[in-house]
Image (cartoon, rainbow, N blue to C red; front, side, top):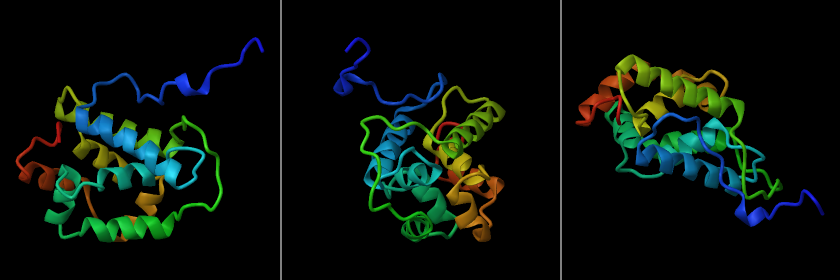
Length: 164
């Protein structure tokens, strides 16, 4: 066939051309793995949030704990709101859904406001929680996690909110 591609050599989806720190890049890759485990046809904001909270020592997990929210409880709420499908597309590359793109755009906006050169996991968390399109926003709206409180919690973790 003329246009047949070898699926094993297809590169993974890439976020927009803005610098992300290593932890943020890892979280975006882990979000793809979360989406594949959930049999999803795209990487949604809930997959990104689950990836950000996978490590209890990460800046997003510590910041939410500082605000009085257990990351495991938040993960359980998200998993109840968006359970894995029993079937799905098994693709080596999944696209970012609109809610994930919106979360990344909010994170980039926060980075510009803070004058940061990189987008870190703290800013990705802020983006996920501010994007009104995604499941996390709806599932966690009653928790009243404000951007101001989240910025303060990330800063209190000893890292600049722009790079966290």
